[in-house]
Amino acid sequence: FYLTNNIPSGLKNVHTLTTFEQLRSAVTNDTGSDKLYLNKKEYFDNDGIVKFQIRGKWMAVISDPVLAKDIFLRIEAFPKLLVQEYLPDTALSHHYGINIVHSNGDVWKRQRRICNLAFKVLPVHLFVEGGFKLMNVLETTDNKPIEVVNLMHRFTLDVLGKVVFDFDFNVCINKFFYPNNIYVTTYNEVQDLLKDPLFNLLPLDRIPYFKNKRLRKVEKLEKLFDDFIEKKHKSIAAGKVNGDLLELMIKACNDDPDNQGLNDIELRHNLAIFMVAGHDTTANSLATILYLLSIHKDVQQKAREEILSVLGSDLTPSAEQHKALKYLNMIIYENLRIYPPVPFLPFRKLEEDLKYKNHVIPAGTGIGLFVYAIQNSPKFWENPEEFIPERFENEKDINGSYTWLPFGAGSRIICSELTKSQQIEMQRHCVACFRIQGKLGKHDWIKEAELRTEALPAS
Image (cartoon, rainbow, N blue to C red; front, top):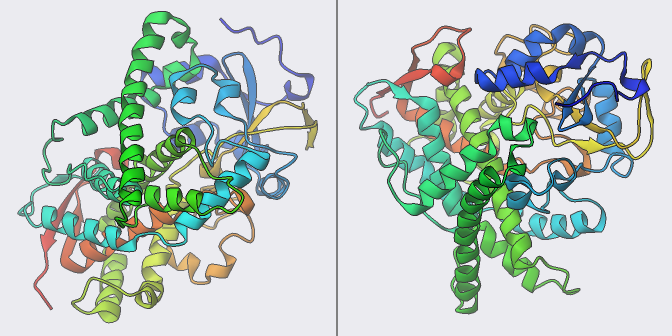
């Protein structure tokens, strides 16, 4: 349906990830970044570039840290490719709109200023409360197998609801099924439809039936978000204080001396991006950490000893104690290297032709960084398949070579606090109070993992 004879001359010699390969992966539900890297490892490791087509537009995927550095430091030459530009008038572009991730220039600077003010005083106590809630659930498992990805999705949804807009989805209370309420059902329906790769590859939403059905679900969730925003305006006016991100953002807008805050639609679009950035991505990171700890008993024990040494029996740390949990942070960094929560960073758009090796990538091309390939390549990491937290003993060296990029780099780095705070809280509670055992072997994929948690005696 899309002709390939319109390949720009500068991309003709670049290896192609064909539309057929993408469709086959989508139909067989085999779209993992690890599979893509293994199938195209020769090209990502040696050439550092692969091209593909999405709805008739050619894109380039890069796995070269040198070019990555250039992209991060020259944001004017590599602005973000907005969702409306490559997937216009779709459920995806409707839901996310213009937000801190998908914006450029003065619009981005305005959004960044408001979000920075909110994230400076992130409500850490809500992450702590979520950790205790998770611990209570694990105490009821009686050493029975737990579907770890499912449980972590529940945990992160509960925590994010409280942190982002002071709402308790209350899905972590039951480890077997989601509560049947409109908030959980609507949120999950929208996330499922937005992740459907077929709708990104094929223009199915040009068919009125599919388009209207998807938009109705998105609009239903947007109405719930609008209600949260309206209620938050009223609670702020009444002098109530909770400290969630929505409250902090609205206050930052109200206090802006130049009256350059965000309107309610922009607030809603940012709520949407915060939820997706902190939910699926964080849940998967939490699951992979537990999986790695379950098969690396020595790392698990060392982490447990650090937690008990720094915190004792009090699992509510001060800011200073948080910083003292150095080995836990090393585990997080190594987990984020092996399993980056965002395998592909948001695409940029070339403002001018780019000479890359023997290729000339034309202006207007979408260009994305394949973080998974960079962070798992033997070109940049010794024994990349091994889980070695000690790689990160010196935090200052983490990003200097642009080979560790789970959240990007430069001025447009993706805020990592939602992910990191949840990982610390989950690790502290799970590792300190339970012995984690994994069902699967080292080379099996985490999606199928079942873990057992055995309560440890109080020390």
